[in-house]
Length: 281
Length: 175
Image 1: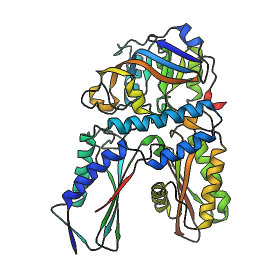
Image 2: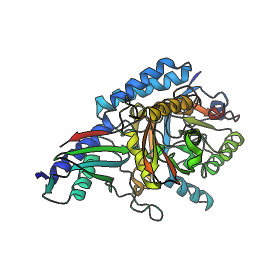
Image 3: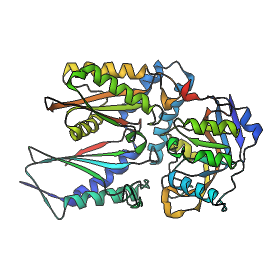
Image 4: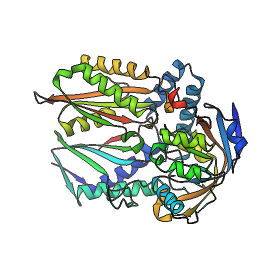
């Protein structure tokens, strides 16, 4: 067994909450530059240039790229040989989120009750924690703050198996079309196929965390990613919904086995402020 | 076309704006999001005084990040406008001339824009540091308990936006 002090988690979570809000994923910059050169609309080019300028200013001034610094999604892959000491893991993570959002002057955007009181907790906690046990004695910690503008445009459908690939394509395109300019395009589209109602949604969220320069390991799904990206960009929603070719930077799919009678499909939309940082402990 | 406008806005300022034009706003603008809109409309309906003068006013849909030391405001980009659609017509009828946000608006808001000769401006979502640089000062003037959703009076200099819905009902999201 390897012993890990939970205070290390607090410290790392605090650090990643800040860094992910200040420093954009370099692959986003690469993708935006690539699409900017394909754009024919001057307005679209101007908007993409402003986004690039904003990423640079945010990093230089250590200011959050977007004022919606999100609800913190925390993904932990914990080796089965790891034993925690010095406190409770959940509390340690929540403490890290609270510290990170305070020290980084990040916006606190969490309400305690979703329906009635809707009172801001002022700490940006509770964060959303996803825990998985894996072989080994290490921890992989990912912090992915997610804003509501794009999260609110996400959709899920329980398709019939007979709907097949066309059903998936139609549903994803309808979701992106309906979202229009709301989720701050250019977007990244995470798609979860299979599992169950809830697993499909989690797969879609995890799909967003796949590197923007990677493809699905199964060539059929990889081809579907390419096809969907092309079709989404043919919708002409464009940067900020003001027209143009650059609606999505990347489509990522994750799939898993499911019931003989089911074809769950979830679409999780991520704005261009694609915040995620990972460390191994 | 580019336009440099100073608040409070006049009818002549609005009429010359075409969709896709870039607009730089200077002067006072007021921040309000979902919770503040609900309160403002309740005040209007019950005939009470509002925390700021609506005539010619510009409302910016933003919940800024906290100001770091030495800066007047934290990152301050627009939030999605559709959430304010149920409240916007009443505010336009009471004198508000421009709303700054992001994303499309409902048909009721578009009708209210044309009938009141006002305008909807889109700022770039996720360009929050660029927007914050145009803010010279910020003070909370109502509902401090709402935190980032409190109403703030911002003094801005060349706050950059694009005309998304013009006073004659042209809509950049539907072209």
